[in-house]
Length: 112
Image (cartoon, rainbow, N blue to C red; front, side, top):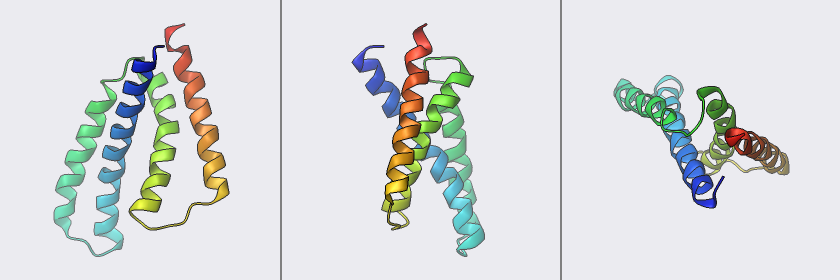
């Protein structure tokens, strides 16, 4: 797998994760934080974009979902810190490193 393909795939995974997180976070705001029901409209759009983005990845869907999970975990932790203001722990960092390692192992096997 070329460096360019790796960079494109990671970028696409990151954008996909953001779309999924937004699609889930907005209903959370509505249900738990007294947000407007109007938040459900951009949430639905975001989840539709998320599903579409998954179709753009360069491997079979099962492998894509498995590898995507690693990037999703890291993105969710970054969201937790940036949007929700939570502190991340050493356990978060170690767990994220393990999930990215697993993602990399799966992604390397895409061409084999």
